[in-house]
Length: 262
Image 1 (cartoon, rainbow, N blue to C red):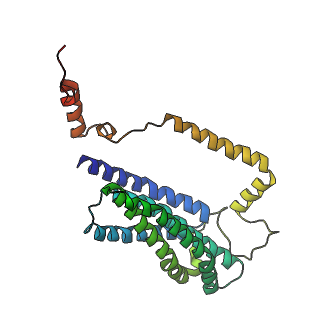
Image 2: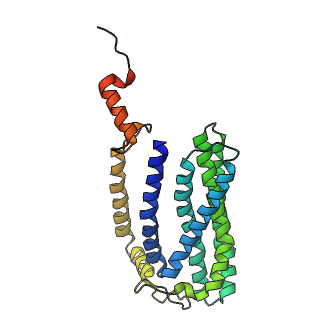
Image 3: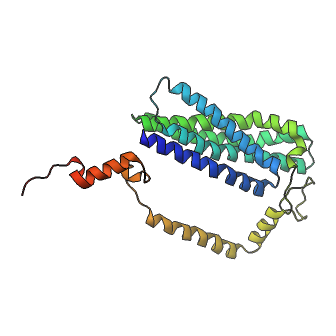
């Protein structure tokens, strides 16, 4: 029970911090609040659908409580990722002069193909976890499969409907400097924030490679401080009664181990 309680608290904490951070990043990438909210809506819908499918599967299989964690984490990731593909592609086609419905159709014909192949690759990879005779592995495998399939279906069906309803209003509440403008794409014309970043990187590729590579190498050093091992009482935060009881037992009675007389 303590494992489940700690897991649920960690999940709630991750949602409280993760969703706002994801929204800020999406605003920075898409340049408008309305456009940034759409991928989050898709992710939430995929998570809800996957939770329902997991509840049905739980009537047949005994699933681990890690299912909720996996659905939420993977759902936020792939739900935002797949929707971002389609929304960006739609806005690109609108900028090229296509009307709303034609832009949605073109985005669906191109971005949706990437979404489907990406989703099916993930699903095929996690099918292997269903072969392991363990409730934990089966639960994790089913959770990822459910939420990825739900995210793909949402990106292919619900998202085009939302784009059709909103149209160019997805650019409402645009952010200065990084906000997108609806104009025909012209390679010779300087674009927005990301266009300037891309041109700067391509203009000085060696310097950009050194800077980006240096950041990645610096991040790798944290790997050498990682602590691995099986999750047990030591992984519990302080204040959990079961952890305190185990520590007392270990300190006073050697955790139940018998000592041979010398």
